Amino acid sequence: MANDPYILVENQETLDKLLDDLSLYDMAAVDTEADSMYHYNVRLCLVQITIGEHHYIVDPLAPIDIRPIFKTRAMNTLILHGVDYDLRMLWHTFRFSPKHVFDTMIAAKFLGEEGLGYASLVKKYFGIDLPKDNQKSDWTTRPLPSDMCEYAIHDTFYLHELCALLGEQLKAQGKFSWMIETCNNLIVKAMQAKEENGERWRIAGAFRLPPKSLNILKHIWLWREKEAQKIDRPPYKVFGNELMLAIVRAVSYSFPAIQENILPKLPRNFTGERRAEFLSMLQSAVSIPQKQWPPMQPKVPPPQIIPDGELIDSLKEWRDERAHELDLNESMLANRAQLVALATPVGASWDDRYDAAHFLNWQRSVWNGILSHKLAGN
Image 1 (cartoon, rainbow, N blue to C red):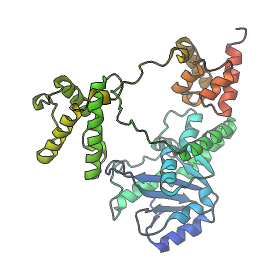
Image 2 (image 1 turned 90 degrees about the horizontal axis):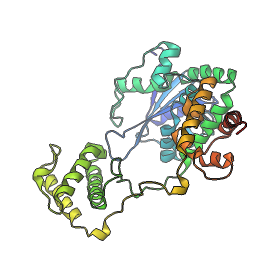
Image 3 (image 1 turned 135 degrees about the vertical axis):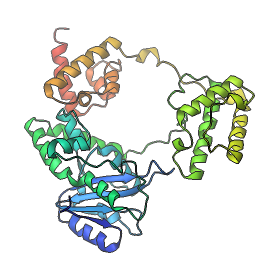
Image 4 (image 1 turned 45 degrees about the horizontal axis):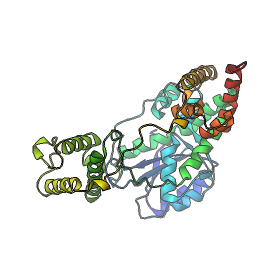
């Protein structure tokens, strides 16, 4: 690493050099860093790019227009590790999507690797322990300390070699086309616009709460969002979901009164005006008429779409057996949600169930083989 210094792209001169290099190569190794742990609105803070033996750290917060990067030849084909977050960040920030992707994590799953993390793969294939000191750093820090830059560039430093090693194994095992189809599907998913969920306040643990408690939860959640925006911190740094549910239970118990003495211990900074605003919000919540309380969600799906539990168990057993034979991670053949979809009678044919499970072509082919063998004679 010491013999391969990185270039920090934070001015037009270094950007021009990067653009020149990107025009000479057919693919680039890319990673990103964001600031989800320190600020309310997630911002893209770094884009690390390795092409050939050149390593760049691009600063999206610098006063330069870096969008031309994403129109270059090398950016048509990207090597990443765990592409989902990076692709979504690049699409959200720049409306950029590559034509092709090689995800080294997906490749590792197809090869049945036990360690799927980037550090685990680098250790296995190159015998190198990657630094972990800056995993939780605030990537909005400027100027960027050298240790944070060193940490960041490691995330692309080995990707080209790793891609070559894993790719050769995939080709030898006849799985390369499976990996490509899977990665192409992730590109499409990253570009799909997501509808804003108007009920994000229905957090884990709220499923069984009655309408009275759901009303209180909704108001606490909305207050936390506003407070997080005001102080520019992630909502969980105002207070966590477990404390929120504990407050809901306490307020529901004393309903319609607000008894401070039965509330769980609030964060130390809940004093003075902030505490008064919080208690005022709780009082407003319990004053909401019952007809305006949010309803409970259905506890069970309609009877006609209840999955066959015994079939799920059989499908899981067949999946695990075939995954072992193919030496790949069993979740690649079908995850839990896909097994449930296969076991739910949505149509007369297995093709209908494949559609419900959103199977890719290679998955359909493998499962056709599994089912023709297991269901023969039935």
